[in-house]
Image (tube, rainbow, N blue to C red; front, side, top):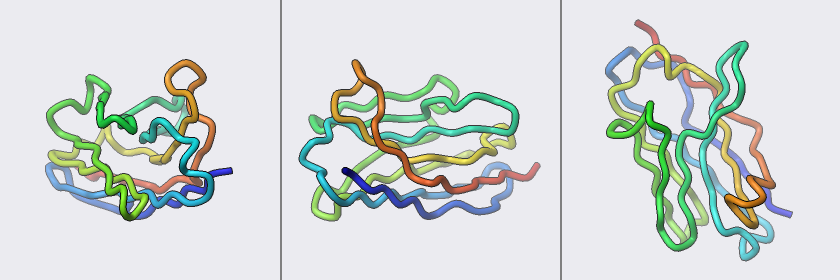
Length: 119
């Protein structure tokens, strides 16, 4: 099992920045990718960014050039730096980890952290 705990959400004005953190614990050796997903009210949960154990990164088109995913292996933590935030970025952001991503998707999920961007 892998446990994921997110932090760093909050309220920010449009154009501002936030950094989300996700601390992983447990059977981390089994993970090949970690990522961030988001879910806005009334919408499905979508991938925002993913980083693999080999360092490859993937982004949703809507956040390319504004968000950056990174990791600190020593701290077992993944970060999401969000710049130039827009009201449409408002959502609950979930950290996720996968044992065999992308084939089997993500296997573990955090509880989520709310990001609210005011106009």
